[in-house]
Length: 365
Image 1 (cartoon, rainbow, N blue to C red):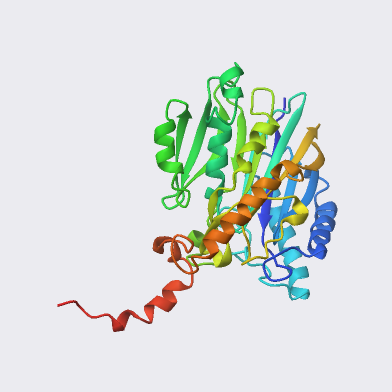
Image 2: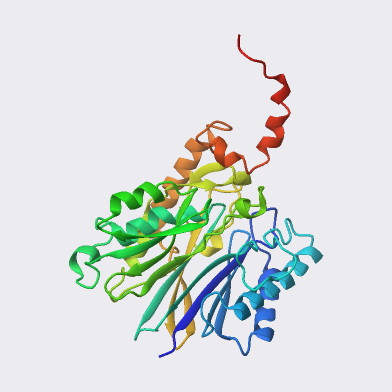
């Protein structure tokens, strides 16, 4: 049986207003382009957004890292960028770090999460998208979903989940990866993913079946460009039910708005606020960082949905808590730990300011 490929590819191609949102003309531009250019390539697609990012959600049979699918996405975002430039939107095309397509999207600036699988009799998936943060933002919730029995009761009571999951972790600085098993290697796993600015969970696999359960985008724009060009705004796919965590188990970690890096100028720490898509417009100090959760039932490759899963009063208290945390962090102003630690700030504009002070330092006698 041929595997289905689910690809989620995102880019910031122009903000409205500033970095707060996406103008509807960009969504229309992307929709029209894919409808015209993808007839022989895609089974189905949806256009979505979070904050100032446009997300392409696509199903096809081309496999992950398909040159044809990546080229289609690249050309789509170039097309949408022209719309953004015509409208003089802010930061038009800022995620498109290269001028020409080179075979795949690695190192091009776009965020990519893809997975191949054989469609089950019922195939529910959740697509998370975050704005004003980095790919390490998924580490905490993915650990809770796939390794913490206090979050996911299926790890204890479901025989098909009892063996646990394998985690593929990326070292962003060295461009290396390691595969680790839970529950046996939980402590070693936490050594790495507890440092989310460097180590990110790329993919998760069921140890019972070997099937992929989750895939995340892990591009780090400042490592690619060598300077701050915008935050990474990652996406993540999670398959649910039938030997995998239930929808409610997948959503539960987001009831706690954990701290992530990003926010204003990509230089601050703040709470990740779960919101309905219509509320994913970060305006307070360009934040706080936002996350959306769109649910789909895949049927013969068709994307039935989306269901906006954070559009639920059960997450109201998480949003209230996020605002409370935001109040606390903002009172610190330019002091750490609200401002990122110096190592992370090396990729912002701060070094240019700091360099002006170097000649004024004298040795202590």
